Amino acid sequence: MDETFVKKYLNDYLKNKNISYESEFSLLSGGRVDFLSYYWKNDYEISINGYECKGNPSPYSVAKIIREQIMEYQKAIQKTYLVVGSSRINELNTLCRVNSVGLINIKQDGSIKIIVEPPEERHLFLEDTAYKNLRSISAMYLTFEEKFGSKLRKGSYWRSTPEPNNEAQFNMGYAEDTGSVYFSINIENSLKILNRINLKRLHSELINLSDDYWINAGITIYHVPRKGIYTTIINTSVTEIEMADLEYLKEKAQDNIVFLQITTNVWDSYEILSRRIYLSRVEIAMEQLYNIKNIM
Image (cartoon, rainbow, N blue to C red):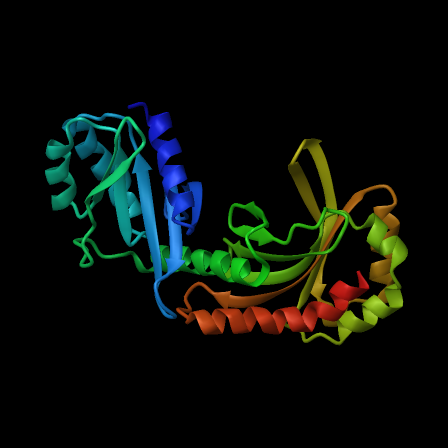
């Protein structure tokens, strides 16, 4: 079976399981796994599973795939599967078992059979930083979806509520430079908003937030669709923002696409938290930003 069909059938399988998953997911630790699924096993554990799809590989090719790709994924992912449309499944079975890799076979009719389940006790240690980063991102995806539903705008390491780009959106993302997860109100094109709202009221709400909140604003230039180049012009604590700053942004928005974000960190990747605490931190940030969302 061609690899394209293997991916299609696995995508359908994951969708039918009604769990959250990503396709073509780039790991911060290196490599891009074909599919990554994640869900809460209980209030304390997130099950994270990676799937590498191939067509009908030879045992030699599988040994190479495990050594060069899957073992890299295993630095961050708890359980990994090789997914194939193969007629040589018995030979692949042994290779996967000795390397603690799961094996899934997809038949010509699209039916799926799990041949090998990865063991609960791994033969390789998770790399602490790689695992914690991936768990933090997975927790972000799950928490945001739990609060706002599944009809979201999605991108690499971020989620946003589905309002159009000239309306305020709640946004959540993972900052690669700091390893922190942030929650924010985000406006991609602020012209209509800055023209219609009371800037004095917005300023009053901003400076009443704690200095844990930041304002980040600047100009976006689109040379090609959906590929913006961002130039930041204001990045400071909300407690230091002045009316003149907001007036300046309004003026710039007349002739430019001006983005505006009010944000705070809600957790760091080194924190291993329960589902309850993740939700609580997002709910607190939502409550503190709600008046600003209403103004906009």
